[in-house]
Image 1: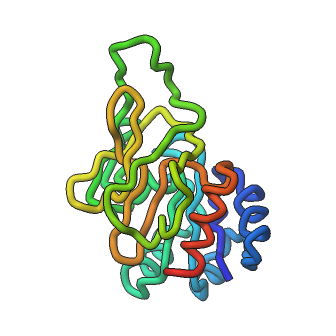
Image 2 (image 1 turned 45 degrees about the vertical axis):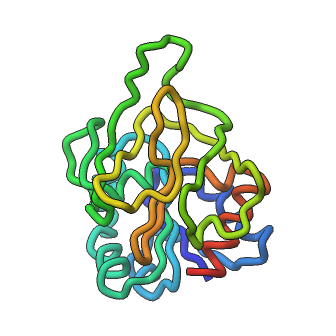
Image 3 (image 1 turned 180 degrees about the vertical axis):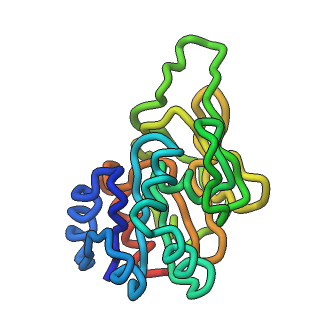
Length: 202
């Protein structure tokens, strides 16, 4: 069972539908009590960094998420804004992030105007080292992105990169915590395989 955290910022139904396609039962909840007994968590998200952090706190999810990730060490997957919230802080706002990944969130500043912001659409992803998240992934993997800010890691937690004017971290992994800047739920067979890996190998 995968528990999808509902903190009022994200399209949760498409994630649940993709999990259903791979035969994985899931639950969408904003209840801290239900999250407390979760076996695996997905932290999705679309929107602004500060709004996401404030929503976690106002929905009484901040402490239970820290307990699950850092003390119980259950598998957690952050998607898009959800991945950015795992980091230390963002140029987009003033709130502190969860700090589970030693990384900062930075705004795209392309000098060439051909690169429109937000970065939106399909992009190939390079996977320089082995990871359970990308195990047996299809050849030439590409995923769907929608974002104006990207994660810049300060350690060796990056497990995938993409290029949009610059090369940026597209996925991270640290122990039981993983994150993707792209949307696996919108990435067809590539995203389906990635979510299958998260369910089966973490």
